[in-house]
Amino acid sequence: MSVPPAPPLAEALARGPLVLDGGLSNQLQAQGCDLSDALWSARLLADDPAQIRAAHTAYLRAGARVLITASYQASHRGFARRGVDRAGTDALLRRSVTLARAAADGAAGEPVWVAASVGPYGAVLADGSEYRGRYGLTVAELERFHRPRIEALAAAGPDALALETVPDADEAEAMLRAAAGCGVPVWLSYTVAADRTRAGQSLADAFALAAGNDQVIAVGVNCCDPRDAGPAVRLAARVTGKPVVVYPNSGERWDDRRGTWEGEAAYDPAAARDWLRDGARLIGGCCRVGPEGIARVARALETPGAPRGAGAPGAP
Image (cartoon, rainbow, N blue to C red):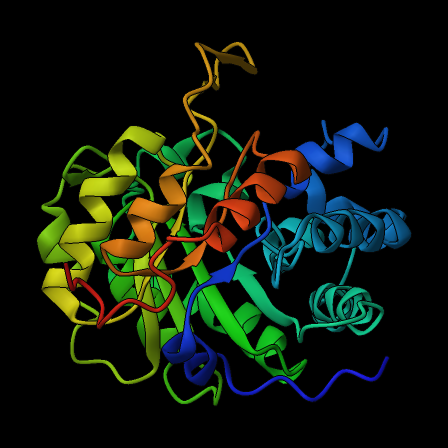
């Protein structure tokens, strides 16, 4: 079956919701990959790219229609520690998009979109500081850090850049500046605790950074407790008037000192219907939400009575 070309992602969101994938790292681990390296899943861009493509394919089979690349923890600084030069790192960043696109092109049926992941500065430090923010760097310094990786990813032609797991409104400002003029739409997604960014700032103020930015096609949250997702969806829709992106983690907590997940899972795929009603248009999962969870999200959004495309973002 031939698949028609995918329309621009912003246009697709206007038609109705799209299912995102889930946690790439847990699927790679399920495939037997060792992610103990400081580069995390990005290591496989160099060492075993076939595993990344297989993980993307697992989410496609589960019903995902937007694939997020394995570039979250990839950076020039991180790869330089392994002896990879700037040109080599650019090639690996582009490869992350190519792998997701190859998986998407192998799907039959509905079109699939690729979002290039741009993780926060704290992810590169590999010490859990992406859940704290406040790195002691200025907005200008953070912009200089993010710009080269954004340029490399944008050159590979993704459908969007996912500025994701952002803990700090200052870093969000830096990322938006770095992405300006790259020619690729973006979504901006914070990691949060209740109604604050992880750095402690007002989430309403953090969302407002994107309100008048036409390059931003969706705003929301990811890698947060799923119980915080619903209020954040409503707030993002109200503050920005844009489609909302939401992909929380399982609800378990990562203890960066012990290097383990703790607590109980609280992710309920049926909540996708509530998120949709409140303005979400990109809906999926993050850490510890695997293909089975994404399949249940896809089924929830297809259930008769689910408010597909109901009204404008934030409409009751």
